[in-house]
Length: 77
Image (cartoon, rainbow, N blue to C red; front, top):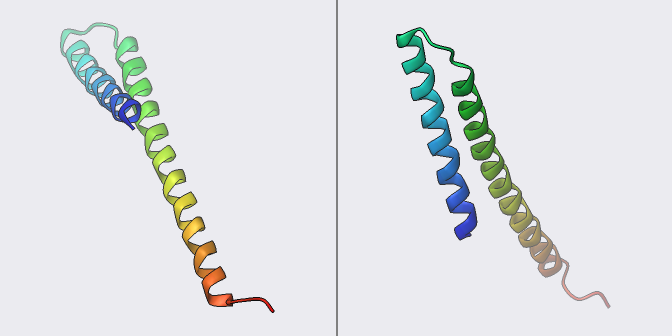
């Protein structure tokens, strides 16, 4: 859990760096290529973390549904 939280923070920091880089480079008339890299990497990390969280939630819901089915079916005699 701790690693996941750290990875999310890294993603957000990269995303912010990318946005700032692109805006600063645009104002100065410099190349913005590296800003897109930071923006892309940050977005990818954030997306993958959210996707992993959703998979964990779906797995938990499936387990709960399986328990409810067993309880509803009752004993099989």
